[in-house]
Length: 167
Image 1 (cartoon, rainbow, N blue to C red):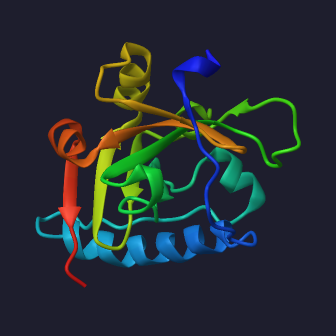
Image 2: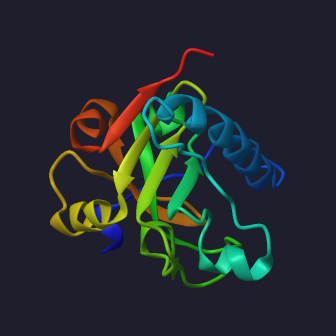
């Protein structure tokens, strides 16, 4: 199985800033989401779980998981979005645990992107895609994460929706 993945060691150190960047992105998405999707009669907004128990239930009450991908245009992921399937908290840990699209919670939709573009996928579709393993998927294994990348042009065709953001 390890032979299927391109082993990568990111050439940056975030000093545990990833969580903070993710939270900042969630707040930005919350603001933009209501702007982007409130064109009809139904008001659409995101309501984040804030308690520890709520966070175990999922990220938002609406069942949307939000992932900040700040490497869409950098490093080995250039021109691709990353979808996580397994993780470990510390690289010294011996095993990975199922996470990302395989996390068992209320997530139905998966929003992934950065401050210039986001993609909205069905979580079930991403799991199906992972199992199907089409040739355009790019498998990645880092010291703390396993997943796959989807080229942006493919992602635009297979997602439920995508938005290019002009901030």
